[in-house]
Image (cartoon, rainbow, N blue to C red; front, side, top):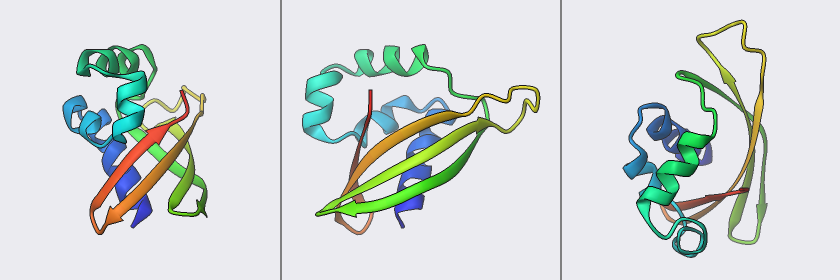
Length: 105
C-alpha cells in the first residue's frame, strides 16, 4: 500500500501533473516550504526527474504513525544516464487511500 502511495506521487511528477502531486503534500510541510503552488512547481522543475522514472524501494520503515521511505530514482528510457537519485520521504496515512507526503529538501 505504501509503495502504491509513493508510486502515485512520482507518477504525478512524471506525467507533469504537479498540481496533483502538490495536493499530496503534508499541510505543515507545504506551508513551511511551498506556501504557494508556484514555489513547489519551481522546486520540482529545478530538480532532475527522468522523463520515465524507475523507482526502486531501498527501505520502508515505521516510526510511530509515520512511514519512512527511501527510494532510488533512475532513468528508465536513457540507459546512458547512470545517475541514481536518492529521495527520502515521510508518509502519514490517515485512512486507506487518505495520506500525505513530505520529503527531505
